[in-house]
Image 1 (cartoon, rainbow, N blue to C red):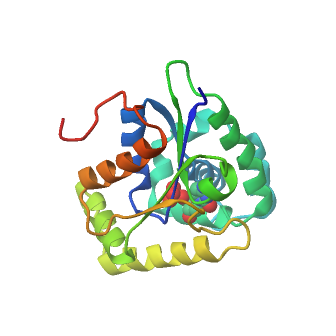
Image 2: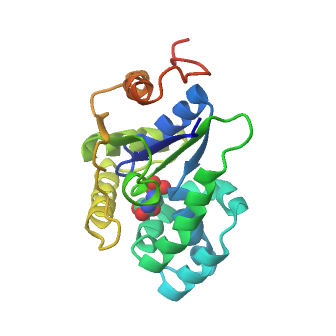
Image 3: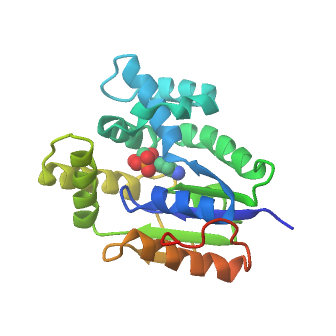
Length: 225
Ligand code: DC
């Protein structure tokens, strides 16, 4: 049987990563948050003291990227996310990272049924052949509010309006870049999470996955179990 391939795309803060994580547990899949690749490059640039992104250096870092670079918890910082969206506009960087992502998808670990990748261009560019594509979205206001709560839980004080503005800037950059702009792939299941709790999001996504990969659930079948 062919390995399962699940492609999840959507804007920043829509809940793609959380969904990918649950699907990985339920269907026994290796999971790759592809935003971490762009963040790892951004992190290296910041470490060199760069405040903005230099194309040639970004290309060089992309060519040297290792799986271990993705394990750094600082990659989740807001500032790194902003720099990452600048790194992501360069076609040469994207081309280098494409190989990394496709290679990950081709080699699921022993005992796993396949892979789930989440990002912006997974369904359209990285795994266009994936039978199962999900586009997760939510209004900018809902995404900003979720982010605000997340930061408060970490003890970081932030201002809703500032977060909302950042989200809008990143959306514009992801939507309007020339190479691989963020778009739902043809046939993708569109999942608007604005009004949904996480358990409803997971259940809706699972019903869609089940329609493509019947009888594939292996782990917990819902969050309430
Ligand atoms: O999902 P994230 O916030 O970790 O992504 C960081 C940036 O990386 C985001 O602004 C867009 C970019 N990105 C991309 O262009 N393509 C991907 N597959 C994943 C992320």
